[in-house]
Amino acid sequence: MEIINGITPPYVFLPIIGRSNVFAGPSLVNPQAIEIYTDPKRWLELDAKSILRIRMQGIGAFRPVNPARDVSDPSIEKLREIALYTGNVTVELEIKRSRPTMLYDPFAEATYGSGSLERILYYTGGTADRRIEKAYSDRDLKAKEAVLYLENSGISVYKVQQLLSVGALGRDRRLVPTRWSITAVDSIASSYYIERIKELRELDSYLLGESYTVGNRIIVMLMPGKFYYEMLESWGPYYGNRDPEVAMDYEGFLGRTTYAEEVEGAYYAARYSIAKYLYSISRQARVVVLLEVDRNWIPRLGVWRVREGAEAALKNLRKFESEDEMVRYALSRTYTSARSWLRSSFALRQMSLERFI
Image 1 (spheres, one colour):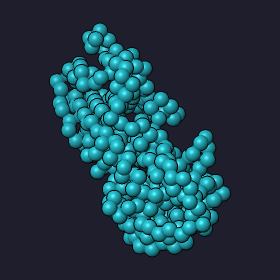
Image 2 (cartoon, helix red, strand yellow):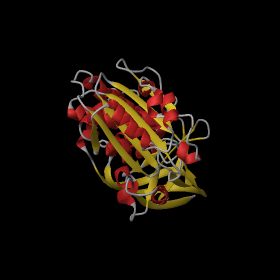
Image 3 (tube, rainbow, N blue to C red):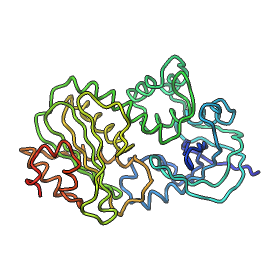
Image 4 (cartoon, rainbow, N blue to C red):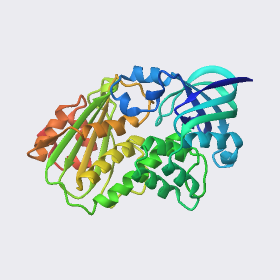
């Protein structure tokens, strides 16, 4: 066994390794990288390799956990307490050294693992936040209500995801793998905004926003009409294929009751940013999102790039005179062929295919 000391932002990660094995532990981070280590908004300025290098500045120590049974384990209790804080926390761990390896999760950021966590011996520092303390201490508050309380209180969505993951929220508390907590928070918060924007006036113009970051081009089209949301995802540029099969998920005004199996977590990440934006301008709209991934991206670095990319796109909206003009422009901006996008889209297929080919 070995005793190590370090600083965590704090950052707690619960990856699923293999088919169903859940692990939990903190990441101790190089002080020079600690300010940017958990701040995806700042990653937008970087390339994928630079982001991976930043994540390698953290040294994670993880132990296998049972999400329901181990929620009250002494070391997990300390892990949960660490996650409650903001600001840097100094931690002392007892670990068993193992071969360093990158731990990837399709939804979360990559983390560098270098040891098996035996015990959290000691921690100090950090700053308590009364909003987080309120949600944590209220055992009558359901997890959904706690997520919305924190979201509406201005707590970062990334912090809320961590709190849900370590079993700090809700009545029946349990550990939640990071990938599930990310999508759960995106889904809960965006559903809250969507239910409210459905009561608002319809958008009266055709708006398009676009962003490109770390190998991901995101185009958001907003159109007049009752709320409708559709997202399409193409990996055509990544594989050098201009006519790929495009993944698509959607929901109409009545919503959806099943998980978005095609686009998966990216669907909810983009929906979060878009629903929050529409709520902020007091409008509902028909929404179509195009996501295109090219070779500048390193797969499995997380869906944060979709959430942040959609938010960035909505900060640079361009107005068009008609839906035809907007769609034609959007399709001209992608490597993926218009045929591929249109044959997968319900919303865009309502227009004549020949007009865009």
